[in-house]
Length: 282
Image (tube, rainbow, N blue to C red; front, side, top):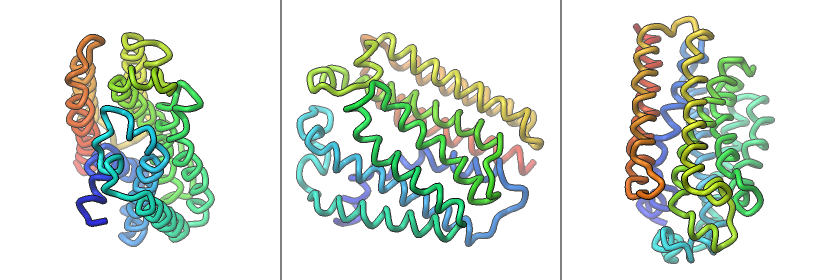
């Protein structure tokens, strides 16, 4: 595959959702600036895990994506990227992830299989449970936990609280994103919160998830010494972004889902990182 095809297959632009939260985790959890060597392996582990997850998702969901009107024109569903190419990408990225985990420390290597299990399970989750969004949330929950293990060789209360906030953030917007596939999922026998509860109730569930996100992220001000007035202002901005995201999505009008998903969630993660960074620097 060429670089453009690779980026399109793995939706590389979606990295903006998780990468700022990864960096936020580093800023919140370190006592002093870690070595560039360790940061390199942490970042490589993150990127390779994400690539592995996207590759497995594309590979396992290929028969579904070929029939779903929303995804049938995606590059892998059109056949422009072969199954063998996706398999090779998954094997390569998985190997890089394990290598990166081993290069950080023993504890990250021991945590790596948990991440792999969740990445493999997520594409199958919508065939098994009505709550696949929470499986994806678990993957994001592990990001600050893994950072804490990588840098401090522990799992602190800060990492757990941050992980819960991140997990419900991604689970919430995954619920909103799945609204688009409501009719197809029902006809194909796939499961999701919208399929179980209907569009209106699913939107309310997503709102509850994001309220949990806001509360847990805000509560970090009581756990992290350097967080103060700037963090409060940043959280108010983040809350405004989440409110705006939900104002775009209505039960009888899903036309702005992509704006809510791609644009606003990018703002949320970037705003949070800048808030944490400036509060620590200033």
